[in-house]
Length: 195
Length: 195
DNA sequence: GAATTATTTTAATCTACATTAAAATTTTTG
DNA sequence: CAAAAATTTTAATGTAGATTAAAATAATTC
Image (tube, rainbow over the protein chains, first blue to last red):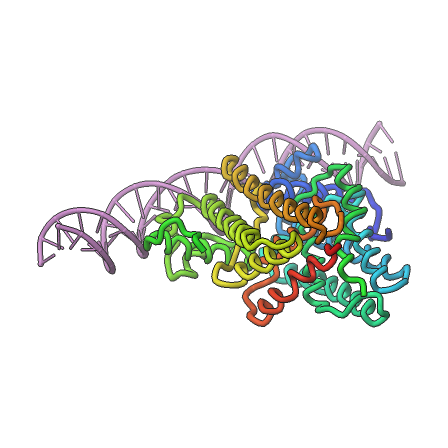
């Protein structure tokens, strides 16, 4: 929770715009979605979007910031509940996936970071790297507390985060699959970590 | 091996074009790379690319077909060597990663499949689905032969293939990292599968 | 080495969006 | 309910970058 800075109608509507955009980007690809596509999904006409975002670049940027927020939030909640590193890792994955397939979804796949303008690109890259770092810290914690077997945390993190990052590419709202994923993914991805 | 249909100068040059394109797509994003970018990488001017591909859409399509070829080839070689399902899975991952970070690389991240034209999109999707299916078959084989613990092969497959698919997004040719990945990834990704 | 074929270039279009401007409508507020 | 603010629309503009045409160069062939 505690994700939306304010709950004005404006920011709520903008959130709807971001979700519509994420939906389009994930399904039609980035270059395949025009602002018209996004607007039409909301029963609007394209120029209306400019009331909520400065331009398309900012739309993508905000989608990615939102994606990062969701991930960070999941991780913070997971860590806050304590337990072993392994438990935290597993819980984080569950929380993150639950968010992605639930109310916070869809989350845009972050495949176009490099085409953001430099400031935005750097900021999103930082968020992304920080997230990875935090996950690696959980893994290291788990190794320290004996719940996780010694491993290359960098590569292990890359492997697991890759799985997570790819989810928006193939998950498109199928409810049964969502339930399946929440129950299977965290265990599948962490089963190999146990000491 | 045995991947290039013919070894005419033309097809070799086209392969170079595809690798240059993959390089650009992965680093600058799809919408961030113009044909000029790709051409310049090869010391060419943009219209020269039209000698090798019909248009940008076909360029992307061919990148993806090539990516699929590399994956299929890795899997076929892995299966051909036999052994338990677990061994085959691990070997496939190694082969695939070796190809991606080695001579066959860079491989384009397949994030823009939906913006291909329908025929191409369907074909690439089919290749991709077939690849997933084949991987799931390996997992099922492993469960049958007792090397892999019972699991949801669909989700397990999705998890592991997601990791693989995301690699081009963060791996950019660092040699040390490449070696690390080849040695770590296959074990990290399959450690949890063992019965 | 002339003729043919392959490859690349320069110069010129063309077009799908993104974007802006101005006006219209809807919502809110006092 | 009138005035102000918020939201969306229609209509017009602008542009990067894909694409095409025609010409030039380089490589092959006989």
